[in-house]
Image (tube, rainbow, N blue to C red; front, top):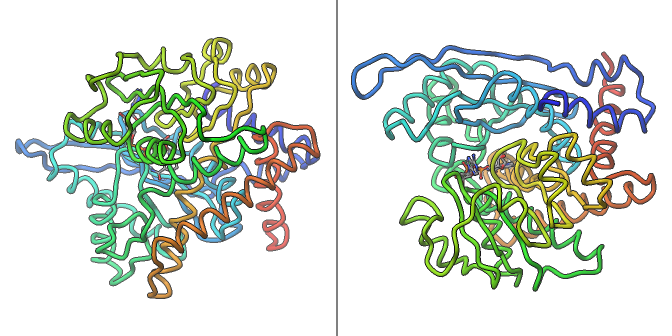
Length: 409
Ligand code: NAD
């Protein structure tokens, strides 16, 4: 099953439990709007580069649509549609008043200069500024984009629409960003890891973790795990990875990775490949990079008993079935990585109120949302004897479905 089929499969598993009609399924799965744009721009060497950008608005029954902008060579129409749909269920699972959207550009940012990255961002916003906005659709960072990219994006949007910081989240603090947004997804991942371990009568302190990805999500996840006393025994990024069964020294690894543009070569640790990481000796596996990395073979060989899906779509549907049969507990992406969109919501609220929250308040509110959402998903899973993924979909689809019916067609 590819990612589109997998998203439909997960949706239908929950819809079957709910007895959802075929008409409602079709309505809820069909995106509201899909846009594909040409992005021409002048490269530093004077040549013309032509790129393709996408924005998919999946559903707005519960509020303005919300979803990240991904700059990655593998971005295509199917991926963006799938990720937009995931956003609809994710915002509903954590019960924030948004629908779902996603966007991106098929581009390898490692091949772009800073000037080219700024120009491609601005040209993309030129193409989609009419369809986004604080009450319509609010982009945010995702793979390959960060607060700086959001700063250029909001600046370009405001050239058309005037002062409107709430049109994009994940902005730098100096430009109406929120305290705690950058760390939010990683922090949320660690909050749900702690919550699931408590249910399993275990503790974060002393647990062993293997982590794939050391970008925004992976690096903050590693930091908060380390601060909680967990042992992060292996970490990889796009170029490879490092392993130390005694636990990696995360503060030193963060400095090493910043200085050497990656984790490879970190002293006091042995080299490990991405494939080895997924199968390595650790109680908890946290994929925090690409989709589709937990294949059937990985699911069969995996030693971890708990998987926390920090990345979007990291587990293939066939692999998910194997993990269920093996009683591996999987906390699904639409819950595990929802910390980012939750603090994006806090940023939007602050922008609209022109009032700033301090970091303790952001962290406290995030903890409340993540723990409440986790408990609800866990309880539904116990009650209905379904996986945490199906339980999360039941909650998400239920909330979107009720809003759709109440609003009327
Ligand atoms: P990022 O670009 O900051 O980091 C990506 C990391 O993945 C880097 O360490 C990179 O080296 C690694 N990577 C890339 N290709 C790889 C490969 N082939 N094998 C192994 N590692 C590889 O991205 P991010 O924002 O940290 O996002 C990571 C994942 O989390 C994505 O799936 C994204 O959709 C999801 N996510 C991000 C946020 C957010 O707030 N940034 C929120 C929710 C979900």
